[in-house]
Length: 103
Image 1 (cartoon, rainbow, N blue to C red):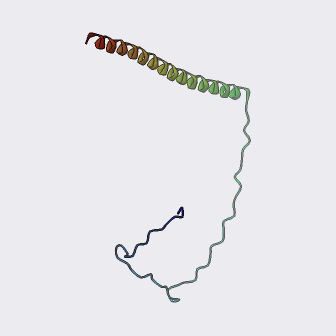
Image 2 (image 1 turned 45 degrees about the vertical axis):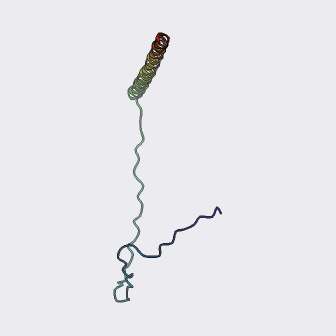
Image 3 (image 1 turned 180 degrees about the vertical axis):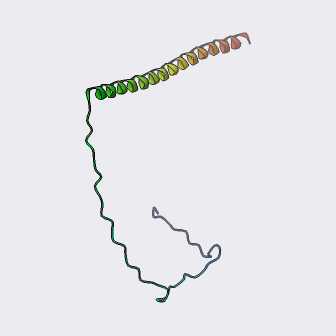
């Protein structure tokens, strides 16, 4: 009952061509190329001077402050939107109640 069933296509769709059988005259022997030898890249040591370390720390701090400012502004936008939707819901509820009382 829960076994998958593969649909059977009794007629082929489109043009069916028989597969080409290669003969031994068509096959040419190919010698494989030798594998390239991996060369280790020359790595240079990173030397941090006090000035470059200070610049790196200042750059990282600037990135953190920028990302934090963006996230806080997005949170503030969501909070303002939620508050405005809540105020609109209260006003609409009061309007609907006034319309129903007037009938």
